[in-house]
Image (cartoon, rainbow, N blue to C red; front, side):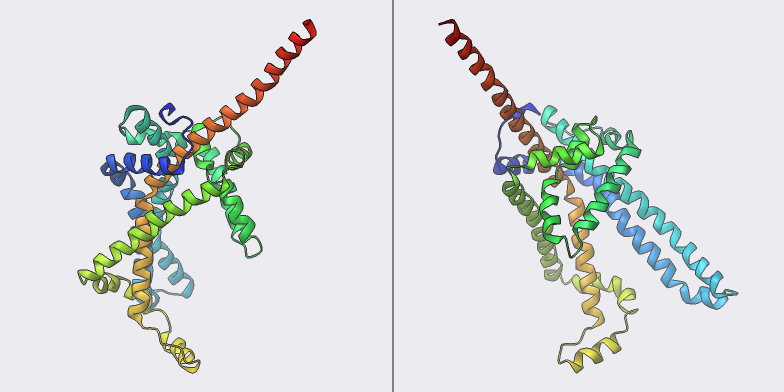
Length: 314
């Protein structure tokens, strides 16, 4: 990706990332279809089958234990679909980085399946990497570590790119490398993350929600989730809310909230490519800049030593 060497600007990164994304948007959209919608379909299928047939299973089962087992078995197909889609989504975190390199080098994105090998050929290492990352994220989300956890997350935000482009590094060294690259660039990295998140998650979600409202589709789309809201004991909750002079909650409100959340998750997933592209370009730029700085530091003592030699000869 030498085309972007030493151009250490977040505005340049955003502009180039947008160009690469929209020039290949059809390929990225198709690539992300199953990883994103597979998770949604899997969860919906698991809950729909298990909750939808729970009453009938309970009536026909010989015992509560066998009824529970049958309900769990009904959820298995959906869980399997979700697990496969979730794994493909995590693979996309590194495959998209490889696609970015191809797009920068050749100007095109092609042979999408081959990019998955960046993760699948190092499957066990990638699983270990994800486990370590999950543990760190769990610790960082604790109420006692929210602020330091957020600060560290910015320092570790390039770990997927480093896993992709520096395959010889150990899991520990991947995190160290990300920390060193972000060091001195924390504020600009935060701004880049904020802009990407605001655009790809908030703006697009709100925009599509407005379109649904304008076309009067929100109510019908939200009604899909009525089976979940009907399970919530709203009578009890509303009595408590009325007692403390708070507005009551309706099934329609809960269903709409779930719909907007699912819509946000879908949009966030489908726009993962643009975030991965930008982070790949940011990684390459910081790597080039840090490498150039290191060369300058090494070159200075060499120049001093030559000057000292000439002074001694005089």
